[in-house]
Image 1 (tube, rainbow, N blue to C red):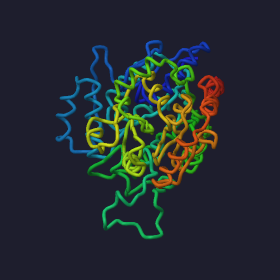
Image 2: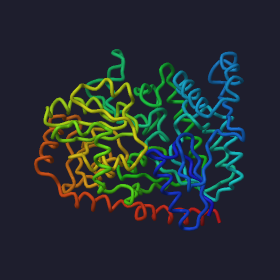
Image 3: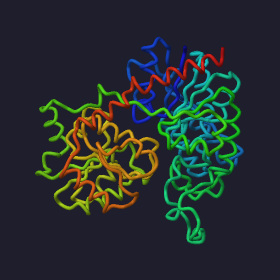
Image 4: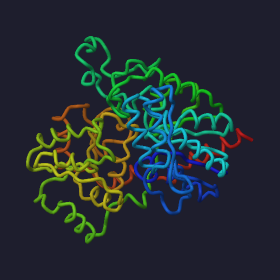
Length: 457
C-alpha cells in the first residue's frame, strides 16, 4: 500500500509521531511519503515539502473575496516566487487580519497536489493541517475527487472548531468588559458543539487581531470534511474521542489510539560522561543540590502554563529549581532569577539527559490531547505531576506520580515536595511508559490501514 502522511512539521512533536508511523509502515512493506511544511525530515523517510517547486520556490494565493482585490492583488505577485518559509509568514499574517487560517496558500497547495498525484497514494493519513501552509478547499477537493480512504489523527481540536486549536482556556480573560459572561455562563467555550460564532478565543492560536470569522470557518470546515465518504478519525486519548464525538465529526467512526513512544530513544541515560557534559552545557551543575523540577513543551503558549510554573517556583522556594525547556529567548529573559529557562532542543539525547536528571517532571498545561512529555519523562524513569484536566490523567497512575486540581499552585507545590521526599520507583515509571511503546501502539494503525484499503477495493 502507498501511504501519504500530511503534517505541518517533519520532526518535532506531531512530526515525530508521523515519522514513527511512516517508519513502522515501511518495515511492514508499505511505501510511504511524509508531506510536511517545516522542520527536517528523517533521512530514512521519503518526504515532500509542501510548497516546494522544482527550483525550491513556492507560490501563494488566497480567496480574493475575503478582502479587496486591490489591497492583496499586488501582494500575490510579490510573493509568487518567494520561499516556503516566507509563504508561511504571509499566510500567518493574513490570518491575523482576516481570521482565515487554512484558507490561503492556494497555489502552493495546488502544486503540492500535483506532486502528490505522482506518488498516487492508496491511503492518506492526515495530521495537523493548521500551521499556515495549506488551502483546505483545494486539498479536500482532491480528496473528494479521488475518493482516497483517509485516516485523520486529531492532535488537537482545530478541525471541528471555527477558530481555536484548544477551547480549554477560561473565557473571561479574553473578553472585553462589555462582553463579560453572566455568573451562570460556562467558564469554557462550548460553541463548537453546535456552531461557532462570536468567538471568545479569537486571540488564542491561530490568533486573529481584527476580524472574527469563526462562523464562516466553522461552516466551511464542516462542509469540506463531511463531503468525504471514506474517512475515519483517531484520537490519542479517550478524552479527545469523547470531545470530538460531540461535534459534527461524531457522524464518522472515531477510534482512541494513543500515540506511541520510541523506547529505544527515550530511556534513562546511563552515560555519566554525557550527563556531565549536558549538565555543564545547560548550567545544571550550578543547582548546588536544589531539586530539579523539569517542564517541557515544544511551544510555550499560554495554554502550557508558564505563568503557573513561575508561581510554582515562587511557592517552592530556594530548595527547588523549576526548569522549563523549549522557551524562546525573550521568554528566558523574562523569567525570575530563581528559575532556569532552557531553549528548545531537537536533540533527543540531550532531552533524555534532562528527563533523567530531573527529580520530577511537571506539566501545568490546561489543554492536552495526550501529554507526550509526561510519557517521555516516565520512559526515562522520572516521576510526573500534572493538572487533573483534559487527557493527561489517563497517563498518570499512583505508581508514577500525581494529578492535582487545575490551577491550584499550592497543591502542585505540595505534590512536588511529596514526590521529592518519597520518590516513586523509576522501574514503575519505565514499565508504565512501556505500555505505550511505538511498536505496540502503532500496530493498531497498520490494522486500520488494511481495513481502509479494503474499503476502496
